[in-house]
Amino acid sequence: MIDGMITFDLSTGLYWSAFSVLPCFDGVRASREVSMEKVFLSYSTHDHFFAELAVLQLKEEGIEVWRDQTSILPGAEWRKSIDAAISQSRAVVVALSSNSVSSGYVTYEWAYALGLGISVIGALLEDCDPHSKLRDTQLIDFSNRHNLPWKRLSEAILQIETAEEADASSIDTISRSFEDSSVKKVLNYLNTRGYQMASFERLRSSTGLSLSDEEFLQLIRDNERVLATARLKPRKSGEGSRPGLKKLIP
Image (tube, rainbow, N blue to C red; front, side, top):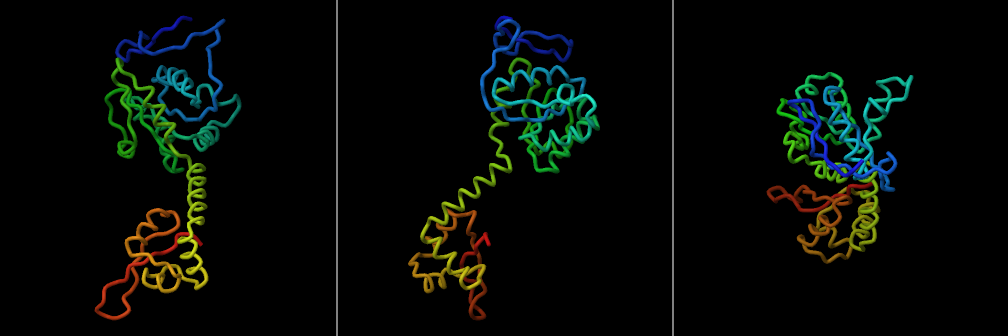
């Protein structure tokens, strides 16, 4: 196969020149040794052309596409295979067309993903009326056959932070917070006294920290996974609430 471009014309049902294809050697596509991210592709069987091209295009960006026509093993229970594939994916890409928006199967797949908290990205193949919940998700326009945004789709997928990555980031942030001497003093004071929160005034008098209110607020901003702002009750009636902070960890 030589370098070339192929596209599918929605109006004629014919492939034509538009998609970039990498060279093959002895009938085998050249591939890169990369760690593959996985996405689930939800689509109507009428739009199989998009699914086939998505597999090729995203693979070149290090993204493995799971689709029901090729990924379900013989004899496997369909619904369980679908559910497992969605739950193990970084994102679900929905091919949006007049066919898919009326498909109960497609609706189940993206709704199940949203229920699990998995990101859903819509690939708009043609002018159609997606479900209201999908209008709030990221939509990428594939309706212009002269400018198909495969790169933008792959970037959108790779930018998604998985729950595991978010947890790792949170742990790393909290670890760095414990290295801050001011945070250490605040948390030690709160934990020793059994408090969840304290005013800036009390923290200054009890921990030896000589921070202004603005410096306390900056400390909170720098350690937002550990600390948050709080307003404490006034000491006397008629006085305003007192600025302070609260801890977000046990």
